[in-house]
Length: 69
Image (cartoon, rainbow, N blue to C red):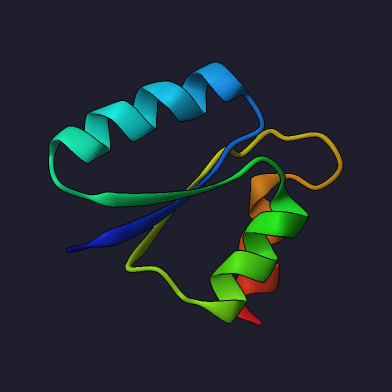
């Protein structure tokens, strides 16, 4: 089963995306901020990462760079 990490600070957006993906048989892991998302991505790399670009603290573009490091 494919596994996606969804990094999003808005709970309603996380719920909607999780529901859509789970119906398709995709395992969804969630992080509510960039720092947690980076830790999750590095410790257990998913098949795909979906990330909000505009988040408080650290934006998605910066987080993407840190994951790639």
